[in-house]
Image 1 (cartoon, helix red, strand yellow):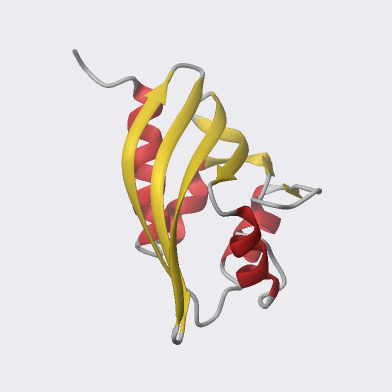
Image 2 (cartoon, one colour):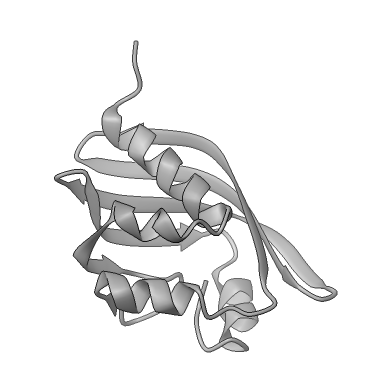
Length: 128
């Protein structure tokens, strides 16, 4: 059985983001709503979200996709490793995204170590 197109879309978007490919934004709708782990307010708009994600100078980030479930929504089960200098850690996350017309319109993420993520990324002005 073939993978759902939205699962494939998720895998391609993650690959582009992890490789630093500037075309990663092509997977996002212009009116994207992006909920960060631990944040009360979302990032709104593709350009704003892409600018925020590119602002983590000195942060190394790697994600390994464990599984992807998809229909009009996508759930990506991911193990992520993030670090800066000697400070690195690994956490598991579930990313949930709504897809419309082949673009991500909204994204939420939930983790097994929310406070650690908040503490780490607060040094860079963002959570996760």
